[in-house]
Image (tube, rainbow, N blue to C red; front, side, top):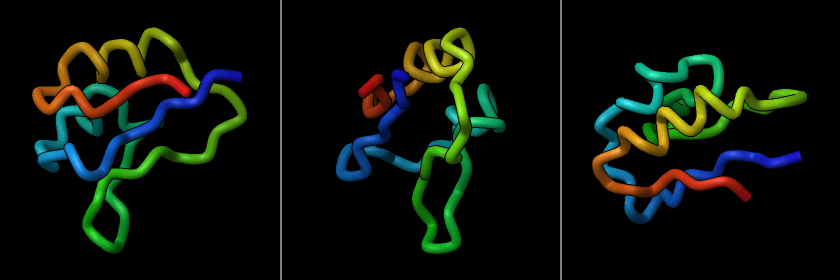
Length: 61
């Protein structure tokens, strides 16, 4: 299964990924973006987050 990954060193915490795909991405209690643990990820939602990320820090693993 493909899993989305956020490169935290490049992330600018703009929140677009959360806005586009709130079921996949969330803000952790430590203040960084994390990927929710799901059984599967909707490719369309993740691809939309990848496309709209201004820091280009989201990818598939």
